[in-house]
Image (tube, rainbow over all chains, first blue to last red; front, side, top):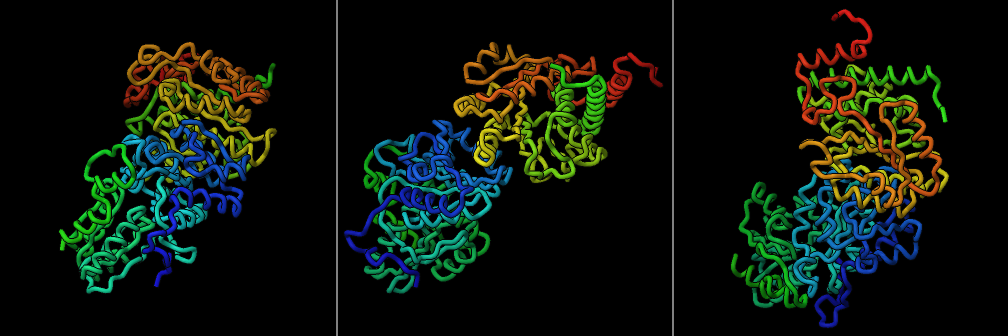
Length: 323
Length: 289
């Protein structure tokens, strides 16, 4: 069995933001390898790059509000052997600097790491301008890019440490709001590896393939359905690209029906990536939970996740609807 | 300040002429590509590849080399020609420009030609990459590094907002190991720069962003070399050299006409251009007269 947080189903499960895990992971990566450098676009505390900046002031570069330049500067540093991490809100990096990422990082195949914080509508009161719900699509479509979507702070820490060790461009998707700790320090995390996080007692009827902040909601939905007699397993995708094609196909063979969940536009995200695999290798009845071609707005994270149909109840409705 | 002997100047001018002939031949063969900017920068490229740059064409990944980032990748015929003539790869390979499977892509791509410092083409990205290289150089070698990071840019490219982000950043960081060269040839695809999007007063703009600015005749070898020597000696700021050039320089038909920005010569035009280059504009007799 995969080791998960024993308090996962408790009301007082510990909650830490996914971005916090990035901040901790970057310090670990910085201690392990002095080639690691950090570049931030006037959001050092907010993206949690501040701990790295404090410990390694000479290897931290304050770029000001220049996401476009930051991406290309990072490419130049990587050309000279550095391992640069650039941090901003996902809406601005990779949102604003997409072409710099494509041309100077991916086309050059430079190992720059892009940490996009504040992804998803759970950014909350800042509203739709600051809620990146297109970033997975933007990043996974570029050749050479790896796309990581950690589901909690511990996975974000591992994803960050791992990203520093792989010599390819990498996008790490982070979220602002505190979310439950799902995994443990012992849970494995690998590029291109999916893991099944929940297996039901009831006879298996469907499988949920989830990423990022919706993994928790998906597990809770599956558990409730299990108690209602509908067996639903949950797979965590920490790496949307490369996608664990074998695990996804095996999961579809096992479950017969697949529901994808992501705090992202349905178009182009995890659901699309899964559908691209299954439609060719194992045509499967599917449903998609995510944002349905809308922009975000102000509200609390809870209100917004419910409004856009991504809370546990909406996931349960989606599962029942496709069965 | 004289750094060059007459013999050296003659040598660099001869290399520039070889580069120009190769550019015309490449573009005739490719049947597409950018004529004016490539010919206009031939003298600057000759000065760099045959005198200024610290590099080893037989060991392109030598760590101690200077870095030359070509930001306006569309003038890559002059880059490829300078690289071939200085020994990076056979001159014969120049004829493969823009052909399927060629290492010489229409705009430079490192995946095909790994000895390039960067891929380029989309405008406005080079200066930021050069800044990243200068940051890394400073981290590894300190403030008195003997490596220099050069960035070649077009003037039309200065329309891009990202260039001015980079200008601000380099000024803030006082990157003395960064030297930019702007090809001030006054043309871009849609016309003259001052009509499309006025850049002047350019010197004032660069100075106000914290740069040491030099202005030179971009076809005068001594001026090119002296300007770079002065830029290297400036310790408190990055330097930028505004090189005033004539687009299409060396072939009267191409000179100063913006329609040659993005078009190649056909066989007849190319033949006449090569004859003009071979005879130094009719100064010496040739078999064609």
